[in-house]
Length: 315
Image (cartoon, rainbow, N blue to C red; front, side):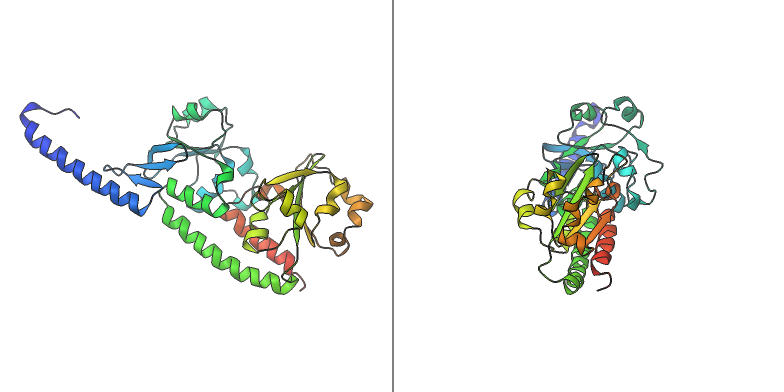
């Protein structure tokens, strides 16, 4: 700050006073919210990220999301990003809310610059994080570090809407308890479930925190997984398997993703598949893969409705 000499003493007093107030304000803010700290101008805040403190806008308006999992968190908090990659745009649960949003890739640096973002969100393993930081404040997250509820709260902290994020979590937990009771009354307390999805010729079985409804099925509704799934897949997130070994991972209910245009579901015509008890009992539930990759509040609410209805249908 430039100070004219004749106002030196008065300005010095003012600076000391402002500094004192800022220090007190910062201390109070940090105690209330350890994830962020607002500076004296109220135009920016300090967000305590995985990689250290980052100065971010107090109320970001132009957020570019290079980490597709978090687009829905922003939408639920009332913020429409200015740019996302192609994956969120395929989520029907967002009901067209991203139709007019720019589509970018992690290498679209020139386009990203032209969009003039005031905040960029990326995954921690993104190779261009340093380059993004030259365009706008950039915060990266390690996807596996947070469960789906912590994820929403963390995004809330970042964009100055922690209160709203925590309110949704509380509401969700109450909803989950009610739906859990309904499901248990319909299928019993010991029913198991398996979630599989296919891409081309590749097939995967999923754990309890990797999208595709797993957070709803295993965490919110409390369904159990077959022991082999729990032992080999929980923790790591997913595991590639062959169609021949599906019976080893199959639960009382099997959720099968519809995949994409490359998906091959010929395994469902095999004797191995047809011999699985869940298949014989018509306990196979097909879901929209493209809309279920995510675990944000909007997706979770839609998944909860769909899954509970499927599990309690006719019971």
